[in-house]
Length: 443
Image 1 (tube, rainbow, N blue to C red):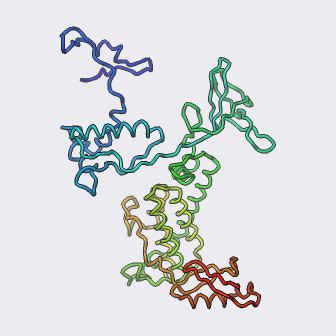
Image 2: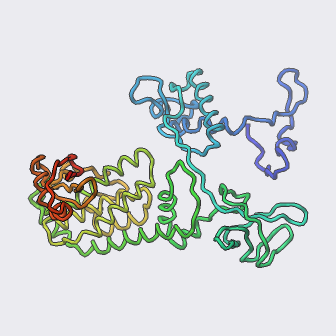
Image 3: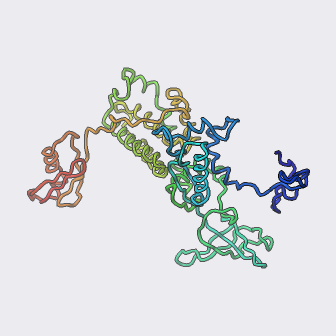
């Protein structure tokens, strides 16, 4: 049936109960006498418990779900059964409400033969809550008013501890407009809530720093499953990082891409490019970090993804051997990897740089560009740096060929200036080599 189009939910109760139009002409299907329609309908959780299945089969006009849901909700490793959605993300309150209802509803639909899966979700991520300061004041009539953080300033004791708060801007309350300096109760830090006026309007951050900064800050400050205490000052750090990325892009734009391409024209791929020592070191760092970033994306640890991006920009900025063999190619490749790593977090700045620097011409639009692949060849080292210990104490480092055997490593350690300095003429009793890590000379 069609519901009356003129009803307005005003908070005074179910408007259908008071609508005579809704109940007009209704008769009881059993006795035929005049009756009223039932207005106590199903809870909204009923719909939210299976809407994701309907999304898989949205064009099906003949049934709740069908072939589309069977396809998208299937276990790809089994013919039938298994779990449906790959990932469920929700707050802690969903674990006892929506998640429970969705599991029950899925099993009902399974028993009715509507779906073939046993569970609605494969993996669960319970996201942490965002925290902020809470400020309140009791009115003359005992009501509690809450105040926005930007209208309040803290009062500190001699040790710097927050002991109270007061208004720094005039603010509305149940008692009317409160003047600057009015004492306010500081309730500590708690979950952001509209009812407590301690949320943060992202529009202010977007206008000041841009949307990418706001996105990057929330991803970098804490792992997604932990609570995040909001800090306006810390947002500036994310902005400075993105400014570094932009500035490096401007610097990279001065490189002659055509000349760089011509220098490797005969190579069938990067594996055939002759890179100098410095360029090899840069590619080693970039691809080592890329390998970790891939893993972090898979486990949804976005804060360490951003940390990886910061390591990449550090490596790119620190690269000074512009004239070494393959330098331009290594820089262009490295920055292209960085842009793709950052794209899910900061789509606007990365897309602009990707397009302006010409990556779109060779690799396609950033939205469709392939995810960068770790080059196993770039991870192969010609030299290894081993920590040098003398008598169990760290005294320096030595560099040896990656193919050096134990005897060669021992010889390099004993010939190093650091050993000569700290041995003070004493003969070594024993040399311990931990492959790939360190050499310890026992005196």
